[in-house]
Image (cartoon, rainbow, N blue to C red; front, side, top):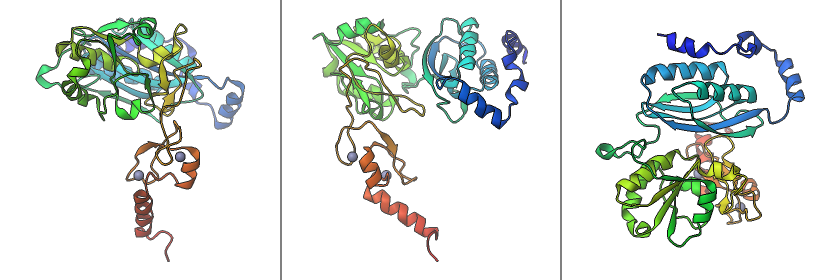
Length: 341
Ligand SMILES: [Zn+2]
Ligand SMILES: [Zn+2]
């Protein structure tokens, strides 16, 4: 049963993987911290559409790999491929990328790599799913391996985004594009990826007769969404290769034309994309309307709504999104008898 895993783990000869190396005391960690660079961690983002022969077996191996490397984050594994974002020490994440690149089941996989000062996730979570991203198409479902839009490089994308015969469509959710998006893009007000097909069917007129350019965070949702558009009868559909994250890193374009920050699903929440002089803040404080890209969660735990809030309003409103939440929070504390005697 574990034979496959052993073969996979066999290449790890580096002493770094010996358990004893992890057994360092607290004081030792602190000393180490002060000697090493502040950016000694990395955050990886990746996906691969390639069917696994033994998905359950692969998942077990992958879990063991991530645990051994002390990685944290979220990895979804399906029969059709995998989709993940993990954080870890630089040497560990480098090792992880090497293992995946050298494994015939995942060779050719591309990683987006960001330096970090520490972990970006509280824990490791590896799950098996039916699909790596889901559009909930039921009987009409298809594999992006068969149908997907043509990939545009960041340079092609920048050139095409200002043409009259193109239309840009943001394939992400509203809470993501509110923090930042390509200028001039159509921004579907959806809460979930699976709501996008319905939006397309209701807004066909905005897309018809145009070259449709779709984009998302790292590219995986567009693999599916662009294929869906082709199957809906749109003939010219293109997708941004590597997503917004790659667009922001590409030296030739430096994120030009992207306004605001890119929403990411880790503790950073947002990352810079536009490194040209055209960078700006597009989101506004929910309370006062001032430009702000500070995303906070409502202070009442039952609400927990994520919203933009400037620093001044954060202090004034005690992080509550509304007076209703502020009162509800006081009442729920009072009902527990806290503060009363
Ligand atoms: Zn404010
Ligand atoms: Zn609230």
